[in-house]
Image (spheres, rainbow over the protein chains, first blue to last red):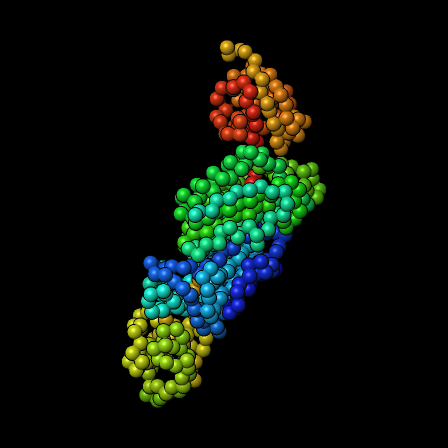
Amino acid sequence: MVIKQFSLTNTPLEPAQLWQPLANLSAGAFVSFEGWVRNHNHGKIVTALEYEVYPALALKEGEQILAEAIGKFDLLGAIASHRYGQLTLGEIAVWVGVTAPHRQQAFAGAAYIIDEIKHRLPIWKKEYYLDEPAAWVYCRDHH
Amino acid sequence: MVIKQFSLTNTPLEPAQLWQPLANLSAGAFVSFEGWVRNHNHGKIVTALEYEVYPALALKEGEQILAEAIGKFDLLGAIASHRYGQLTLGEIAVWVGVTAPHRQQAFAGAAYIIDEIKHRLPIWKKEYYLDEPAAWVYCRDHH
Amino acid sequence: MSDVPKTIYLRYFAQLREQSQHEQEERVTTAQTYGELYQELKTQYRFTLDLTHVKVAANDVFVPLDQPIQAGDKVVFIPPVAGG
Amino acid sequence: MSDVPKTIYLRYFAQLREQSQHEQEERVTTAQTYGELYQELKTQYRFTLDLTHVKVAANDVFVPLDQPIQAGDKVVFIPPVAGG
């Protein structure tokens, strides 16, 4: 049975728990991605971060992204979870974990999921800076 | 300071511990790869696995692979650890974790490291099967 | 028919929430499409984002900006996203 | 000079260990290169792997198979590897 779980949470993401539904004796490869809150961005010193999410649409879009990745890369499982609310430096903003028979599929699937999350998930990031007003930042890859 | 740690171990790999030296407030992306012992391979039912390693050369080669990945992909850190000895189904045979400012570098770095480990590390895998004699298996990508 | 005012329900997120100073709003509009509705709101609330940088969801589904508004729609304009 | 027998130290891994039934061996050889040494061992122990599928390390460093053997070398022939 293929695992597909997308979630949103305002509490810290715990990789040691998140991966567990993916355990599967047919899987040879597990790849995880974590987005960490950095202390700088485009030359500015970041002190904190806030994510605001549109939950109903984000959950649908997240599930859809996982389903696409599973179909495209023959994954055995895909789980992703995104934080919202206030985050501090070093915290995990997003966690993605996938399993596949072989490593190439697992890497491609995890990369696809985080790329699509960054471009499609209705979630917004406000960065708080040391010396400047806070600002809503966009995905620079896209705009 | 860039983190670079390669190790060999005959006890279970613990991802929740292994990633910790990589914690870094400048890192925006963490990617990990785990190779899991599967219950089948090329149509045969696998019951157990044994890795035999040439430690002195494997440690050198492993460190060299991490150094190459750090240089090629501007990683902030790279850690890898390979099991040897007897493994049971579902156990982690190899763990790779890397950090980078951005996700593309982190994915490319982790994929490079596991590819090179599979092709260059002097370690050998004996698979035990349900209905056939055990056999030393090779990296099929390469031969 | 096309001039009949429709009641819709708006929710605002991120900079659109801050600039409108509303989290949600029940609104009567004569706008024909979501795009026209956005221009109406942009003028009223002085949104800094142009229509070309915005997407729209109606009833929790992405829809084209040139699609006609239906009475009772739950409408959310989506400023540029930044997951991850 | 070239015919002077040299003492070397071999370690065997994986199928070479099983086929030779040795983990290690001190050996006197007149082989000139590591490649020649492998052929000598292959004949004696009936190794199933051809030279083209083997690499060699001397003193814990990969070296070319056609490199001359030095007396006292610690030699390991490397059958096809399978990490991960």
